[in-house]
Amino acid sequence: MRSLQTSTAAKFRALHESGCFVLPNPWDIGTAIYLERLGFKALATTSAGFAFSRGKSDGAVPRDEMLAHIREIVGATSLPVNADFMAGYADEPESVAVNVRLCVDAGVAGLSIEDNTGRTDSPLYEKQLATKRIRAARAAIDDSQTGVVLTGRCEAWLVHDPNPLRTALERLIAYAEAGADCLYAPGVSNPDEIAQIVKTVAPKPVNVLVSGFNHQLSVSQLADLGVRRISVGSGLALAAWGAFLRAAQDIKTNGTFNLLANNAPSADLNELFRQRT
Image 1 (cartoon, rainbow, N blue to C red):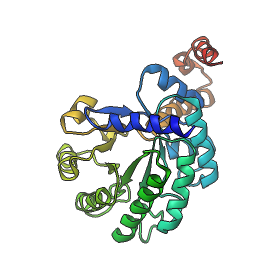
Image 2 (tube, one colour; image 1 turned 90 degrees about the vertical axis):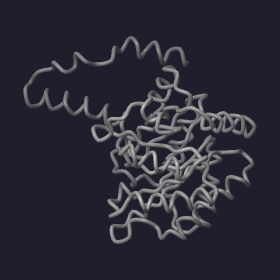
Image 3 (tube, rainbow, N blue to C red; image 1 turned 45 degrees about the horizontal axis):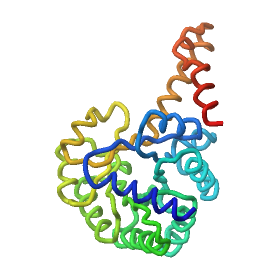
Image 4 (cartoon, rainbow, N blue to C red; image 1 turned 180 degrees about the horizontal axis):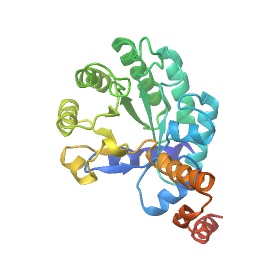
């Protein structure tokens, strides 16, 4: 099992070395299977997408439930899986390291650790502590000898930092020096700011989140900016929720079923999943 994980992690690491790839985010076994069949090279979990499927808000899924979900996604696909591991489910570096070991044991090829505290009064961990948390995650991964890819996330845009670019640049440099293999500042969408992040942390790869209407850049445009990895976060889950909400509201409000005409054919899904069994 560990040798397979090491091989899968090596494949995932190689994807970051040149070019640009899309890392889509399934939220259950079925969506993971479909994304692999489409030909994507790797997948990532989505904390929000999974939380919504469990009737919970993003961040309300406890660690062990999230670990079970991560194992489920890893087991559903032969592709490398990157875990959205939130803030490591702990504040102190030592506890982050313990939890990272558990995440590695779930079979992931990569995982991310963010600096969002979840507190409104102090939304980001103090920079020195945040850096120590990344260093602790790095040490835990190195001890596992799996080669799992570590992504350091700065949440400056998502917590509405007054100067998100400056905060992100300072922190992403520190996270890179602490051992993060890939750097990620979800929420940045301005091409000039993306290019500045890419240049600042080079030669380490940068992940960019593409999320709905606030991000109009294409894969080729992001690649031209030097981005190596693109994720959609909860985007696909929200697309599914959007179709569900519109159809359900149409039935309740108008008494019509017109939007069900856009449904995926059940025969196609049956055939897709029959092949797996």
